Image (cartoon, rainbow, N blue to C red; front, top):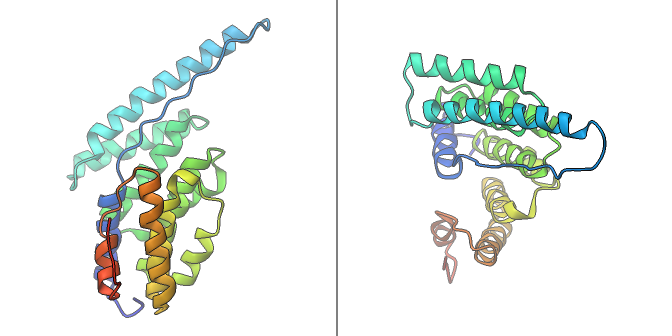
Length: 218
C-alpha cells in the first residue's frame, strides 16, 4: 500500500467514498416540558433546526453529483460555510463538514478532507456522526499507506450501528500490513456483523476470495 502512487491512493479513497458515503438523513425532536420559558426556547431551536435542514437539503441537491463544475462547487462551499457559521450547534453543521470532506476528496485534496473530518471527530457530541468521521479518516490513512494510524482510529468507541464497517476497514488495515490471518478474521467478522444488522457490505467476499478464504459468503 505504501508503494502506491498518489493517484492510485486517491482513486481508492474516492471509490470507497462513493460506496460508503451515502447521504445521511437524521432528525431530532425535543419533548415539551412544563417549565416556564421552555416553549419559547424550544420554538427557537426548532426554527434553527428547520432553517439548517433547508440549507442542508440545498447542499445535498448541489453536491451529490459525482463530478461538480466550478459553479456547483462554489455553491456547495457557500452552503457549507453558512451551515457551519450560522448553525454550528446543529446536526446539519456536522453533516456539512462530512460533505465538505467528500468534496475535498473529489478534488484530490486529502489534507483538506482530513481537516474537516477531524473537526467532526474531535468536536461532535453525536456518537454516530463522530463514528462516521473516524471511519472515513481510517479509510484515508489506509489508502495513504498508514495502516497503523488507521487501526488506532478504529479503536475509538465507534457506534455499534457501524460495527460492520469498522471491521471491514480494520481488515483493510491488516491487509495493508501484510497480516493475512488478522485481515481474514476482520472481514469475516464484518460479514457476520452486517448480516446481524441487516446491512450490506459490498466487496468483502471478493477480498476474502483474494486471500484464498475457503468460504466467502455475503
